[in-house]
Image 1 (cartoon, rainbow, N blue to C red):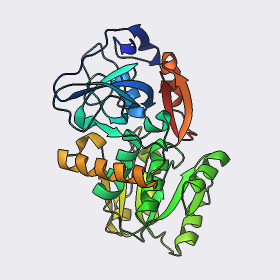
Image 2: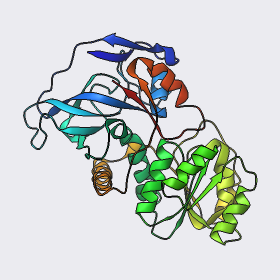
Image 3: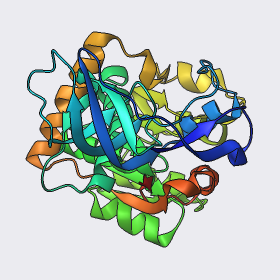
Image 4: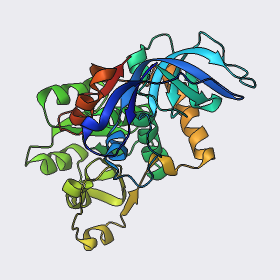
Amino acid sequence: MKAIRVRTFGPPDVLRLEDVPGPTPGAGQVLVRVHAAGVNPVDTYIRAGTYGTLPPLPYTPGMDAAGVVVAVGPGTDGIDVGDRVWTGRSISGTYAEMVLCDAAQVHPLPARLGYAQGAAIHVPYATAWRALHQRAKARPGEWVLIHGASGGVGLAAVQVARAAGLRVIGTAGTPRGLDLVREHGAHHALSHHDPGSLDRIREITGHPQGGVDVVIEMLANENLQKDLEFLASGGRIVVVGSRGPVEITPRAAMARDAAILGMMLFNATPAETREVYAALDAGLENGTLTPVVGREFALAHAAKAHELVMQPGAHGKIVLIS
């Protein structure tokens, strides 16, 4: 089978398409024919060798995929050959024509969703759900500000927040991105290039201080101090992403009894992970969650996808088609 292999950590061009043996499922395992694989920023950090936990070389990248079950091992009750599924992580890596998974890593893909959409579920939606519910403890009726709301995680957060009854403000950097944020449920969409956006937030919430209860922050090194300036009392900022250091004024947090919460999806406990997947499966089934695919690339063009996923102006998830 064809698969992307990384034999040394480095820039995107270390991603090479190779012929490798196809895996065989053992007990409790499932083999999936991959039709689409999701590309996430975390994939680029691992490829570059800068992530906290690195796989042994060589390896096949990727955590998200969707496709059809082609073989099952013993002890996989409830999963049959021919099932359409999406994956939440894998054993062998998803940038490949075939991926080996533990049975708990595959989930039913609703008929209303295509394979590319299925590849856009795991990291974006699990991150968004964990950030809003497990870290921020967001409550219905609260105001939530989602920075970078037109990207994969951002759009997932908009949908998850709306499904939970929150009042949503999303930011984006392009007119198309702002339209997308509105289309997927944000009550208000603001350009993060607009120097007057802070005043607009105060107008929207009707609070002279800002009045935002929860901030989902994708780029803390750029925004964290500004986030503190429009938090309501008891507000929570969940840092989902950052690309450098930041200086803040602690008194801005003190004055609001504010909390700055770090979050990594892979810190979730097994119980928290089960909770996240149960919520996502329900939302995908009942239609409150609908993944958005921004761009598709052939598997051979994984390096180009890795370049683009780190650029601003995202409009949904980038996926690889195999």
